[in-house]
Length: 110
Image (tube, rainbow, N blue to C red; front, side):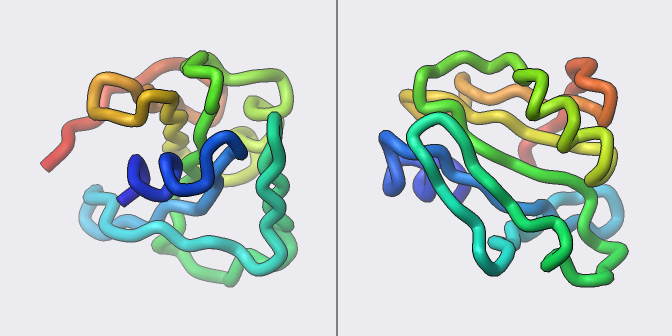
């Protein structure tokens, strides 16, 4: 679903929050007022519901670069322990997962 949403909005960035249960990410949640731009996604964190199943974020990098920017790292530090970046051409080889400090972590796709 993440890859298809990213393809659909290309060349703009896609962004959403991640929901998990029992350490399995099962849903994405698009925050009200999210702005998808050519080189940014703005998510209004004040509109994030009080929901302890929200464990982090996902956003796309249409240029294919799978490293977090300084702005990404700032958002990671304030919004949960797991963050995904997906990149063009949006397939299972083009994503990375990071912790809130921006260190790459391994996740399994089930």
